[in-house]
Length: 360
DNA sequence: ACTCTGGCTCAAGACGAA
DNA sequence: TTGAGCCAGAGT
DNA sequence: TTCGTCC
Image (cartoon, rainbow, N blue to C red):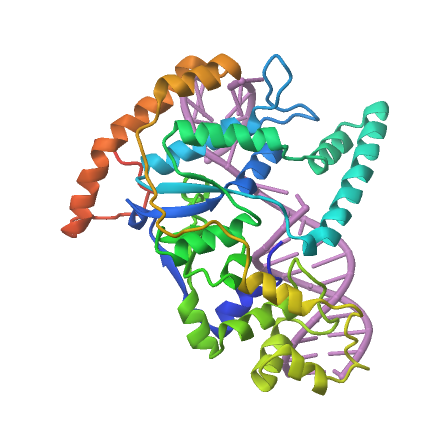
């Protein structure tokens, strides 16, 4: 997923668009998050031993809920206001890509069965990761949880990233939080990476400023999109032999892909036959997104009993664990306003020698 | 010398008890 | 699976 | 900090 080499391209050609941010600076900020990506990761990683994952007695997987519950609490505790956006139907352009993935999954499933027979633990582990799939029901369970926790939730008509960008463009959120650089192709004013890393790794948040990208590259939105298509995106192939560096210089020289094609030595650089770059461009320019007209985002207090009924009652989470986590959340609420005052008066002494777990 | 490719590596969540 | 970083090799 | 557990 994403645009190949875009991070490096930007740090070379438009370094000013990247800014490191302190985690603390996201206090009270609203961010749009592509929930599907997170769910997928959790399914992949949480609680797996061999082909086992976390499940309730009915055999329903619960890794995604465990992960999202904890992560959402962490964000709220940190004073961040997340909006979750879920993927809708993938664009038909992605069909080829998706079919490929399905083939691979089928292959992996066969390999998994074989590995089980042979009792090859390592192989079982590897293959079962490859067969991970997020079902419709699992997405809906996460939506249910998010609503119980008082967050705004959206089901995007198409790709979640595009709708995150739309929310940001409409000024409803400060940034889209994503690891996926595609988001910038949708002209998302701000992209925040590593938003959730501080706890586990201490990486700072990395912000990308869309306007600065265009300014420093000295390009229009269309030209930037063309560069991304040439680098390689999800929607279509790219030209062999043309990578990030040539993409930039070619677009600078010719202005767009159409003109570029007229001057390109197609002996050296064979253009893929049936190359739908125009359609790809169109998907970036006019994606199908949630309607933001008159939209208002509201955050409400978590419904503790509702959460307990769902996670403990249906999914067999430990009640004490769930209630404790929610208690911490409540405790953090009071601090939020205090921290805001402190930062307002510039009184925050951020000593990041030890990545501050605040003590009272 | 520069650029792109394709090979390889790595890690990937979060908590709390010890 | 993804990405990022690194290093070899090949093409320009 | 590391490691086992979360369901």
